[in-house]
Amino acid sequence: MEPVVYFAGWQAVEETLKSGRKPRNGRLYSMYHGTHINNAKDIIINGFKPSTGGLLGQGVYVSRNIDKAKCYPQKTDKSEKVVFKLKVNVGKVKKIDCDNHPLQKLWHQNGYDCAWIPPNSNVSAIKTGREEDCVWDPNRITVVGVACCVDDNKRQELRRLIRKQLRVDECDLCGQQTSDGPHHTQDCWECSERICPFQKEHVCVK
Image (cartoon, rainbow, N blue to C red; front, side, top):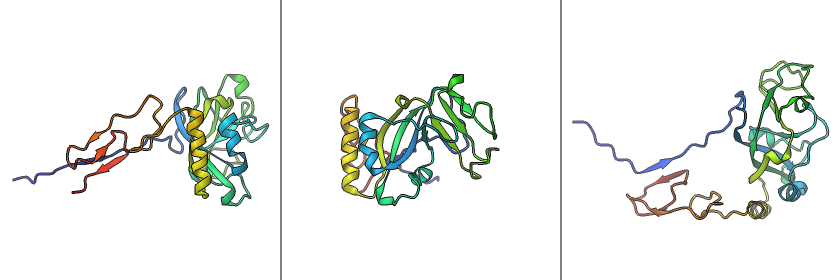
């Protein structure tokens, strides 16, 4: 006789843009940006200001790798850094995979919204295994959260400001933003704990 397996609960896994995977045109992805804590409020309220230069020219430099984002700004103590979680509409993407690529700094003038240097490319300025993403229009980037900030009070303050800018509330159970009204919650069918279907996981405790 086969053993009976009882299941109660779930775990959800968020899909992210993995390293080395080319962004698909027109898709919305989660990415990160590290900045100085003194710039954080201005970015939340007024948006990003494109850099005037860089490896891929003008634009806003973002990263799909949170550990890379934590390195910026360079030569800055971690107590003065903030890493934002972003939603990025990449639009039309151009891959730059070699030194002196003809569109390395001219991709936007040729109809592209985002430039991407893949890992292990032939771009000598990029360390092995690293990659680079640059977005031309700051309006394609939305700050949706604080991924890293060692000052807990500052982190909470910035999160409140983000929610205010997005004009959203936050579900008490799943912690997600609820711009379309409160989530429909219910009692768990097994343990009767109040749950939200958008929770990343729920384990019944008897």
